[in-house]
Figure 1 (cartoon, helix red, strand yellow):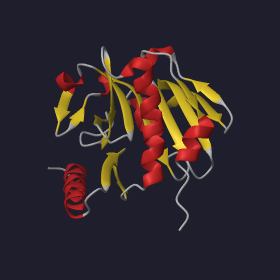
Figure 2 (tube, helix red, strand yellow):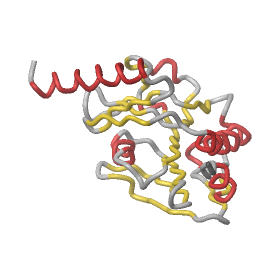
Figure 3 (tube, rainbow, N blue to C red):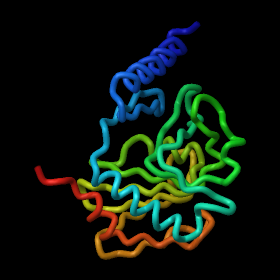
Figure 4 (cartoon, rainbow, N blue to C red):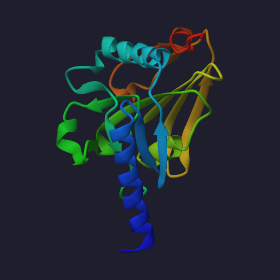
Length: 194
């Protein structure tokens, strides 16, 4: 076993260890590195719910697709790589695309969305490499909504940043006409005042 392979196995073991001891924490292995996210706060989940409800109301949950929170996505760069987007729109037959553990092949994903409290992370490049057609990022810190489309090997070819007050129409390739109210989603995601 090479040191690179044993290092990856160690990341998977560390990920399982964290998840077992920190209920609600999320681990991901992206581009060979471990990402650990703490328990998400209510506003984070409310922003996810806003996007989910719009997608479901547009008809993406039922028929040819499903709208699912926290589903595992196998990433192609390294054998153990996987991500857990906050929200995904997947083909209805996603169960037939189970690869390992609770992670599914990227070819059944139409859209993934993440709510972040910092700038874009390495997941954007990994999702592009996995050929995820649309990546939506709700950026709570900078009060912006990012829509990345047209995946390529070196990232997404199109990246538009939207401000509060804008209505964003997502590409038809996801399977329905979906328009997101940036202000409403960002307001839902504003952290609680303590």
